View (tube, protein in one colour):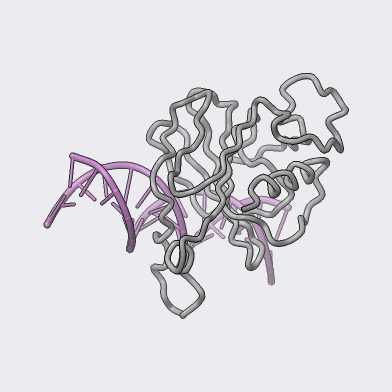
Length: 179
DNA sequence: CGAATTTGACCCGCGC
DNA sequence: GCGCGGGTCAAATTCG
């Protein structure tokens, strides 16, 4: 049922203006008023500007997993060994599709319903080995067309897919999240 | 056939 | 101390 034949090119950010010059533009994020980026972690204060409804606050405790210690695989290290400063990015974009294709391959590993929203939040994970980047998408109950994508972690490998100019945006994102 | 996706169950941290 | 919420994983299923 989630089969959406829509292949969003890059009109997500451009709410208006930027008719075609958007392609291959090295503009920064600040250029998009509809997109808000929040970096940081621990506080968990997500920028809910605009909607101010979703309660995304709380701890980022990822201890939930590790229920199958079948092997001594390298697990439970982040948030335990050291205060792994995991950069968290929250993007609020206006699009009809939840999954914004940034060029990476994501595998959905969970879906939970939000209390303040009749929709559910989707959890994605980078399929790349060694790349434990997580991404979660949450739709605002108020605005169905509003989607909040939260990125956790950074990719350590080149993009597999070639996205029009999204690559540039991703590049900018990494720079912004640089710690 | 392989990979990706789905749903349910389980666990952890915090609140009361 | 118990309950709630949130988050993750695992197995089964489906799609390509």
